[in-house]
Image (cartoon, rainbow, N blue to C red; front, side):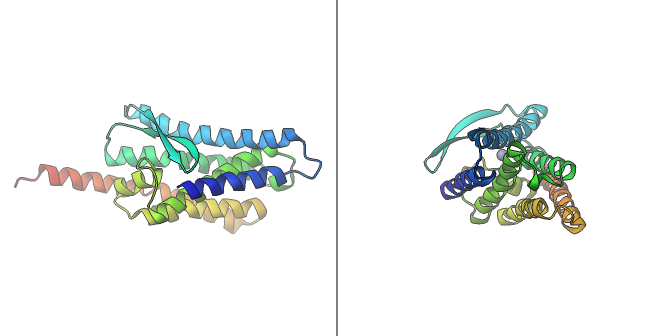
Length: 215
Ligand SMILES: [Zn+2]
């Protein structure tokens, strides 16, 4: 987790300082990071929305990601379907945000748009970082990919793959906006990931049967 967070911070710094031409204004860099900050706010809002919807009483816990103090949103135990929804919601918001940006501004790469680029960079890098933690199955217990893995009863590295695929495809769409293949592969990957909710529903059913069967 620590290394991954350092990588994402470094990558954002590099992107932020090279996103604009040499005469880049400090304002561009500030806007880039403001876009990234909005991305973080939207991701967490996605979790909170469903925490509230399911009455899961969210709370904030301090965690440390390497040298960076960070936070995790905790919540009361919920059903597998609710858990999968809450844990996935941050990614769903990222996916929707990328769809909006890449569909409405196919020329984004050539635009002077540090704010939008900061938001997109955050979304892509965050997913890549989360996929990395899912592959090594290491990080705070509140990590989104673990919540998804447990509730859908799927190995965490597979969850990582479902998070990584849309991120890489959206990253590629930024460079090749004219590609219909990339566009629809990305959308398909996002929908497929969300459909794992059905697997969580089956987990929920199985658990209910186990607990009600007479012994
Ligand atoms: Zn999250």
